[in-house]
Image 1 (cartoon, rainbow, N blue to C red):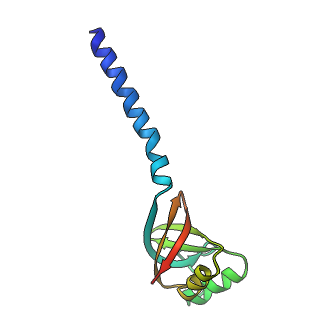
Image 2 (tube, helix red, strand yellow; image 1 turned 90 degrees about the vertical axis):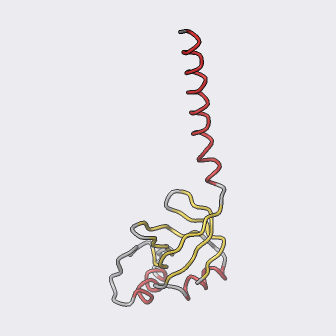
Image 3 (cartoon, one colour; image 1 turned 135 degrees about the horizontal axis):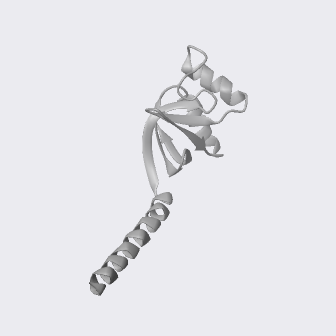
Length: 113
């Protein structure tokens, strides 16, 4: 009986250690997500009929670029001028964004059509 408790305790600790390590491994890993380029102010529903023009207008008023993937809106973080220009070109259009995902934010490494 006592041996069963020890085995159960050891297995429980191993399980908890494995679960604790999982987020750390996933945080540094690049992922590629496909969605529509938008902005954080409008998200998936634009106020203007033209999604591209609406996205660009919101960006000019201080909003950040976003990627809408189904019902989820990710904020795109980048200061790279070429990446920002590519996002501007793809405003309102489908895109593939590669970067490190943490919660609702993607640290952008690359953007492609």
